[in-house]
Amino acid sequence: MTKNVLVLPGDGIGPEIIAEAVKVLECVSQQDSLDIAVDQALLGGVAIDATGSPLPEETMVKAKNADAILLGAVGGPKWEALDMSIRPERGLLGIRSELELFGNLRPAMLYPQLADASSLKPELVSGLDILIVRELTGGIYFGQPRGVRTLDNGERQGYNTYVYSESEIIRIGRLAFELAMKRDKRVCSVDKANVLEVTELWREIMDDLAKEYPEVELSHMYVDNAAMQLIRAPKQFDVMVTGNMFGDILSDAAAMLTGSIGMLPSASLNKAGKGMYEPCHGSAPDIAGQGIANPLATILSVAMMLRYSFDQGKTADRIEAAVSAVLDQGYRTADIYTDGMQRASTSEMGNAVLKVLQA
Ligand code: IPM
Ligand code: MG
Image 1 (tube, helix red, strand yellow):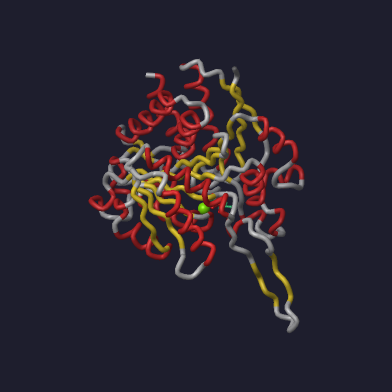
Image 2 (tube, rainbow, N blue to C red):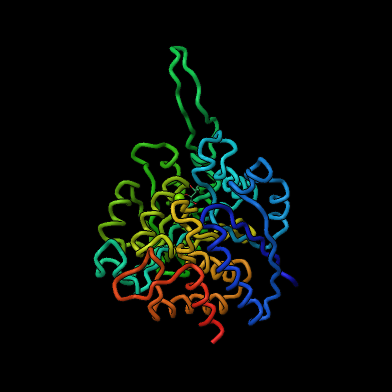
């Protein structure tokens, strides 16, 4: 049966990196007879410009009907002055929420070829392989009430609500434990249980879940300490599970350990395993249109799509091996460039991956 992939290039460098990833998807789809059909739609700033909404109805309908979604990135200075409720980011949050993509997998893996590009010493990061499991459809990102109100004394006050219900914690916790079973069987749950009741409940539920997974070793860490430990001794972690906002922050930090956020893919899954796949980096408006962005995170997101949504682990392995091969060949986009390497533009990098796949 044909598998429908919806592509949402978005803003900034989004269209440039997506173009390379789609080439890779189409190449392996043909080679491995995967019968994948690709459609496109608007999300984010480009959607605001064309329709007035960051998440047009047509996009939502296509997203619901698709078997998997590949997203570039959204947002940019052009839309920053808009009201929060219609900014590009709202389109992204809307699609995550509407499709209930609660489980966000953000692997931070160091390619040995890039050890010198990391901001940490090679011995601290060599062999690094962390999986951050971030809750994506709840927490303070979505909690009600929220807004900016005017107090009786005339002063304005901004407020958001940090809330997690038991079922939300259980489903993300379970996902983390299940994934840990396929890895090194260690889960570190990150919270702020010394201050926030919501994460006190989070911790209690993680402890309960751990009883169902006796083989998995569960530890707890406060988020401030976790941020420090990621930079001090990142190899101590296997799976980290945390809420929406802490996961947003920690995953950027973890990404940088690997040399560049331009290397990190992600998957956002719902309970049926339907997924949206996107690079962890943003739209990088400062370098948009220059053809210098690193397409590898998006290409690796295609590999995650094949693995998690389409159960095509072998094809996913081939893409990941091709990425590793182009790094061996010395190709480097600006973000991962070190002396003596071969400078590559966005499309040169994409083409190098294709060449390996076709060899
Ligand atoms: C991410 C991004 C988004 C988030 C923004 C663009 C809304 O930072 O995917 O990490 O905060 O979730
Ligand atoms: Mg982020």
